[in-house]
Image (cartoon, rainbow, N blue to C red; front, side, top):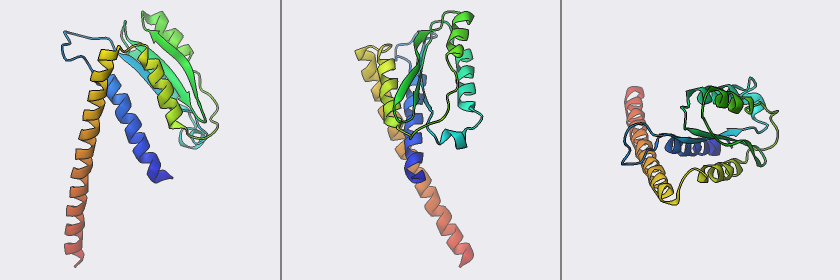
Amino acid sequence: MPVLRVPSVVLLTLVVLAFLFILPADAQGPQNISVVLIIDSSGSMARTDPSNLRFTAARQLVDLLEDGDEISVVLFADDSTVLVSLTKVTDAASKEAIKAGLTSVAPRGNTNMLAGLEAGLAELSEAISAASMDQQLDKVHQLGEQYQQSEAELKHLWEQWAEITEKLEG
């Protein structure tokens, strides 16, 4: 099971990064962003994050948002729950209201990452037009290709390391 979990985590990270760092090609100056945090609340979190640091990090991310940015927070375990629906940051008070919604939950259930991704995409679709969505998906595809290239490079380095180790031992 741990072998399957790592690629899933990498894929989830790539999707989140793609949506966090993508700006329109014709961007002029600062642009507002729409962020959907998808947080694991399954039973395994009792062991891997007993201090609920993922919620602390989520509150810190809210502090980094600028006026005009949007955020939504989705939890997943057996199914998904929208903890904070897509909300626009307008001032410090709106940030505090969003952070108040980021309450820790008791870990429970299994890890159904797909349910979290589907709910997150549904939330994000409120903020992204159809034309913009194509651009976002192109960027996700590009990130996936970059990851595959990095994976090939790492495999090549590993093979070189194995050859060196073999020569040293031989």
